[in-house]
Amino acid sequence: MKILKQREFMAIPLVLVILGVLFILFAASSVGLWAWLLVGAIGLVVCAVLVLRVARSHRHPIDRDAPPALRPPAGGDVHRVLVIADGACTSDALRAAIDEEAKGSTVEAFVVAPALGSRLDRWTGDQEGYDDATDHLDGTLRALEEIGVHAKGRIGSKDPVQAADDGLREFPAHQLVMAVRPAADQKWLEQDSVEAARKRYEIPVTLIVVDPS
Image 1 (cartoon, rainbow, N blue to C red):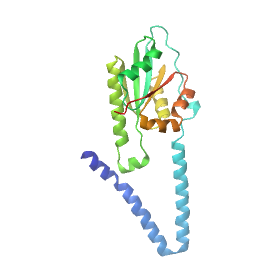
Image 2: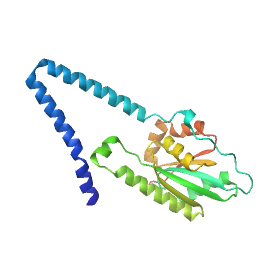
Image 3: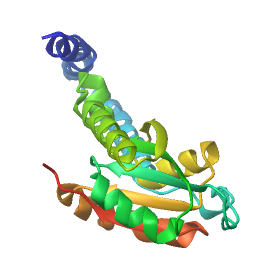
Image 4: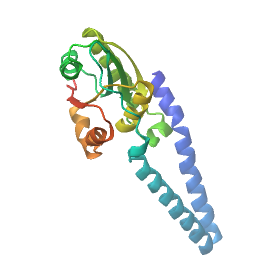
């Protein structure tokens, strides 16, 4: 009930914007043709700006901004793993992904769960993306605990590559694990997120497709 009330409250700004636009159109219609032309020109400029901002929001960070890589761990060193979790990973999947690179070393992990959502979601107060990310984070942390890996984490950027950048600056790692749900897998691959990460970072990047259940 609390979330529902919050969404209703956050929808108020969107309603006010729509009412404002309708008022401007009504006022322009009562003034004359020149007012219609002025409103149309302003509308085109606003639409162009919005299109540019949306296009930029789908671009990954530029390569020169990539965080530096750690040197491969020496014998006995702690193997550090960054997990980008767009789904709650199982302990078996994480163990298989990590053991291949850890080679028996002690493992520490940091989890970043991308909060997928849009600007419209923030306008309307829709927190579904944030709630999903919280579930993915909590589930992945529990799975890591089950296999004896000390881990912590947080919610991160909706762009998985930006989330990885931020995570690597906060937690320099020897390995990056990108975990996706089957429903989200196509979206990530369309954005070339996994391939972009493999080209961007000088550390192993492992892809896990997690069970949505």
